[in-house]
Every structure is written in C-alpha cells, then in structure tokens.
Image (cartoon, rainbow, N blue to C red; front, side):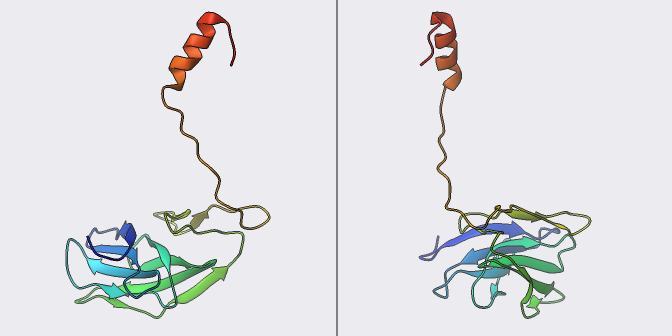
Length: 146
C-alpha cells in the first residue's frame, strides 16, 4: 500500500527474505527485505525486474532489459549484496513487467526460460471463455455448429 509500483514478489528458499520490484527510485529496480518486515535494500543498478532466488538463497537473478543479471546475497547478520553481474544477454529472451518468464531448477540451478523464435514479439491477446462447455453441449444436442 504505497504510492509506487511494487510487485513480482519472490521468497528466498528459507522464507526469511522477500525480493520484489519497485519504482520507488523512479525506475523499476529490484529490492530485498526481511520477511515479514524490516529495512529494504535496493540490489539492482540501472534497472531490474522479475527477481528469482537461486536454489540455496545465496544468489538472486533478475532481468535488466534482455540481460540476465546476478547478485550475490549474504544475510549474516545483516543483508549484503554484491554488485550486479551480467550473466548473458539475448534479444530472444523476453521479460515482462507484469511477471517473469523464467525459473531456476531448485537443485541444479539451471535456467528455464521462454525463448521467442526470431526475437521479441508483441504480447498476444488472451481470450477467456466462461461456461464454454454449456455452449458445446447445446450445439451437440441441436446438431448445429456456430
């Protein structure tokens, strides 16, 4: 309940930390804070979104444009983060401000990402049909296809 955007939450594997994106600085950045409350710390530099914790909670990954970024995290006794490092960059991997399109395997730490053949494309339209089965049954009974 703040005047800025805050979203894309991700809990650390031990449940003690919450990473999220916020526009508190005027641009989308990644922040981490103790859960359920405590002092927050900005861990991205130059933009960032859709944070995901590494399998052991010692690394946080996020997207900055088309670049996958990594930040080392330590929390003994207070939260500390290393400077961000670019892991790779590709215009065929897309990130969306409303949600992430990648995850990390909980044991191997390997990335699973949505890749768009041929490069970025505009977001597709989603159509939701409610009670579609009722209409299908009615058409089957009458033998009419619409």
